[in-house]
Image 1 (spheres, rainbow, N blue to C red):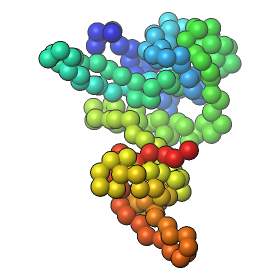
Image 2 (image 1 turned 45 degrees about the vertical axis):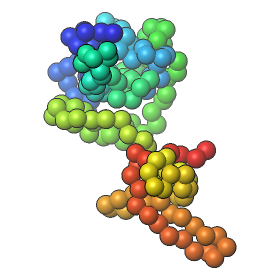
Image 3 (image 1 turned 180 degrees about the vertical axis):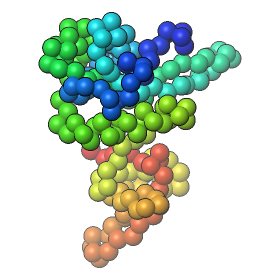
Length: 182
């Protein structure tokens, strides 16, 4: 485990924002637990990257242990040209490189996450559930209830249907308490 001071910066070069990086964006799907090591490799190769991270406090044998973990486990975003993409592959820390089709959209989404991190606010990973996906409630009084997710301006709702009647009802649910059904 790295000391807090040994962690790579979230953004490299640190003085720039993700919106200022030049080149094409790629997503490196790293080998297990290689995100920070890949970031250190990219610093040495002077390749711009964004590795959003979050603090985590664990209690191990009565001691409080602080660590910094990647926000998106297994992924690092980097920016460059084809030559730099090949250099990333040469690190032997990458399982796959994902091509970004909508560059503008990715930059916009990453800039928002970067803004939260730079503001020093707490950011946590969260399940990504699209409207219309079939889900199951995992805990609480509605445990094992299945339905289709619908998002409103103020809440997430689970639509419960009675097909025989051609009717449905919905109930508000917390996205932390639902899982996708394959």
